[in-house]
Structures are given as structure tokens and as C-alpha cells.
Image (cartoon, rainbow, N blue to C red):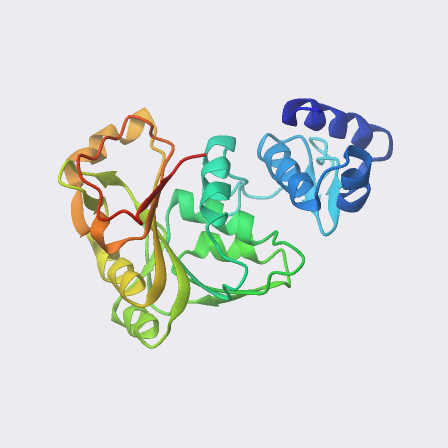
Amino acid sequence: MVSQTERQHAIASLLAPTGAVSVGDLAEHFHVTTETVRRDLRIMESLGLLQRVHGGAISPEPMGTSPPRLKPALGKGMPPEPRVLELAETAVSLITPLARSIFLDSGLACTAIATVLGDPPEDARWTVVTSSPGAVIALSATDATSTVVLHGQVHGNCSSIIGSTAVDMISQLRADIAFVEVDAIQSDTSLCTFFPETIPIKQAMIKNAAFTVAVLSPRSPQDQELQLLKHPFSTLADFDALVTDDHTLDFPVLPDHNFQVVTP
């Protein structure tokens, strides 16, 4: 069986002569599912090896051949890093086939989740309600996923929509599943954010979703100074699952036997 890395090298070789490949042709060529191919293309795009388009991918634009444009800030339209993308794919795997409505929080990991949601399986028809402007950009690439943007103010530091209007909107809705970004977990299983203004949004999503997923955002060494700014907003007991790539976490007591800790 061809490994993921070998398959991606082969995709790059197939892309080079013509400058375009299709999901269907690649799936048939490698004898894998179309979802596996889409995952490969997302990873390759995050590495700058190609540009995804509807139904497939094309070669990335050579330097100097496209009109000058402003480079978007991280999380506002740029492909997520492979590590974050893998975490996002793990989170999305928790969506059941019957799920139709999704709450999506703001943050690095949730914006990556939007990238995955924006490339859904053929039978998926999702409505995503989000507080993330970056997620809206990622979701705009598909017609299969409807996007509802909360009304309110945009918090400049974390690029999240905040305010009472946004909270009121969520309070009037119900979602099958909610993905809520977590910046840190304390030893007593309290979940924290670095931005207290986002807490009412997070709590409203938790309250109004049938299944709740806490997504622990991967952090870089530069984020260590933010550890002093942790603001608790919930506990693991309010969630059905935790998605994390931190294998060092150790919880002496989990909320109940149905609680899931899911890693890539």
C-alpha cells in the first residue's frame, strides 16, 4: 500500500506536466476514496505545493506572474500549517452523518476546521454558524456548506466577533455539534481562553449544542507569555469530547465514561 507521503509525491509528479489534477482521477489512480485525496490536497496546499480549486487542484502561481496582493494575516485565508490541519481533520471526524448544523468558534484551530468543512464529503450538507471572519473566508470556497456569520464587533487581537448581539443570535439557535477553541487547560480541568471578551460567545455555543467539542489550540513558543492571561470559561464536564495533539496531558478524573479524548 502506498503511504501518504509517497502518494503526495506522486500527486506532485502527476500535476507537473499538465498543471491540473482532478479529485476523481486521483482517487481512481491510487485506489483510495475521494476524501483521502481531498485530505492530501489540503496538506499539499498548506505546504505551498499546489492550489486547490473546485474538483481538484492546479499548480501554484509562479512568483511574479500574478497581480500584487496583500498577504493575508495567519488565520485569515492562508492555508493552515500541516500540524493544525491534522488536528482540524481529527475534530471534523466527530461529525456524524446526520449532523446538519454546526457552531464554529474563532481561533487558529477553528479556522483550520473551517478549511476542512469547506471541502465536505459529497453527501454532506452543513450549515455553519461562526464567530470567525477567517472561517468565513475558508468556507467561501464551496456551495455545499452554508455559512451564517454572527453580527457584532470584531475583536482585533483574536479576530473574533464579540458582543451581546452575537450572543443573542446563538441563543436563538440550536446546533448538532459545536467546536469551541481552548487556549489552555488547567490542572482542575478548567478550560481557558486568552481573550475574555470571547467567553460569552463560547458559553452560548456550549449551551445550545447537542454535542460539544473542545479543541485545544496548538501553540508556538511565542505564545508562552500569554499563559499569564488565562481566563477560565468552562470545564471538561461541559463537553463531550476534547481534541488535542498534546500527548502530555494527564487528567486524573475525566467527566464520565462517555467523554472522549481524541488525538490525530
